[in-house]
Image 1: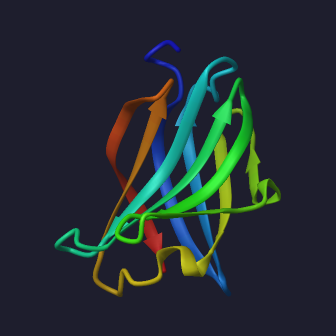
Image 2: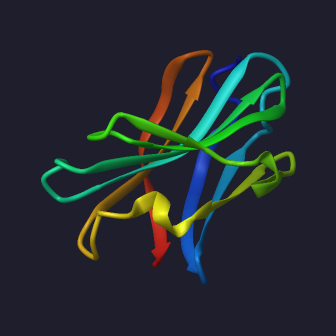
Length: 129
């Protein structure tokens, strides 16, 4: 993947009823070959509690949609019908329980990975939770 492809430009998360809607806007397009992951990392201020919300692509198509609870070491997979994407926008509808335990005061950032390596991290997230 060319390093100028698929740079995260902006990430947003908002609560809608019992759903978290995460939106990732990228410069360029979702890579048509290889692995590409976008996600959010949410944590308590001391990072003792962490959650990862991820959408994974392979060769331009969504193949996995999940959240990971770091302290429990558990992953919850969701139906891919909760993911939509165009060339430069990716949206995932996660259950609100995916960030359970973070509390009102927390930190959140977006990241991307390409072909198994960290591509971007610490991208600011606009929140409406």
